[in-house]
Length: 443
Image (cartoon, rainbow, N blue to C red):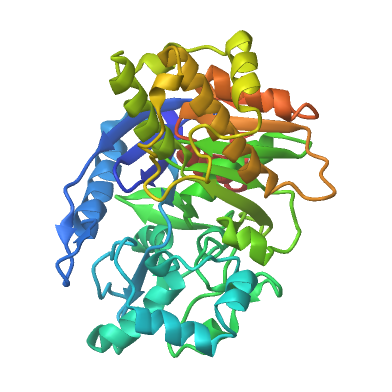
């Protein structure tokens, strides 16, 4: 039986996926690719945008010609902080520059001094100073460093909108891409910041993520979405599936805590503690905090396994032992055995004497007690004074960590802790927003 599906192209830094969802959000087809990076015109590694475009074209052609599926809609979820520059003919001008490139200090200093200073600008745009990761500043970089490119620019769009543009020929923007530490959005006034409006190149006003364009691809009538930033896309299924307020913690290399129900203005203290704001598809603020928890765990857990001469994945089998916790609390109390002076610059304090612990299990318990304490502080940054949320969802690697989950539950006694194993969360979010807003015949 031929199935009608939504095709989502989920473009991460490492993995590129095409995923087909049926109308019950079941994944009926998935293919994943990894492409070697190429070098940009500065010799810096970047994604091969030409190869990505061809891969998307080929995937749509193969699926539409296969006869197993009918693609009713296509949408795109991609990583953020990446811009595409179009000329008068609507053609791409530059490579897809890598957000890990370095932004020259003179551009940073000059930009902030002209726009109210670093502190006020960061607060107003909910964007900590992150260099090239502040994608708006990439425009100033292109203007200063590559005028031969900049002088050709007519339109500037974010990466997911460019992939959509290739099929719709519509130059658009949407809230999730411009509201993600770009330095472009004035959260006080819910509009582009003045510096963006003063540019001599165009940035389109954001339209709803529920917007679709009717297109013809390979002779087939297909609705094409405007694309969405992957972090915001991952939040969509939870927003659609909950009637009460919640907090979402996405764990992995970074531990990202998102509260879409905190409308309080971002403070300087929060910015100083790695807090920022995203925008949802409905232009609502998402107070967000970050902790480099996965990597900190990785390097410290490796040191423990090396010291105690146990297999590298031994931590996966350690369950919370209350007797060990009580013993450690008697010894250390509120002190952090691993991070007494805070998390060290290189995330690992090799001066810690591991012989103070009787076993790997005991040492690992203390490591997780310390990490969970820092995670709690990060979570508390996004909890407003008038908090009414009653649940916390935890996704990613630490959703399987028994010590972390139970210690959090013991601290946040006013909330229920749920672990969620939503696969392909960003792609699912891109599909949900298409399904609920754009395909009325799917009811």
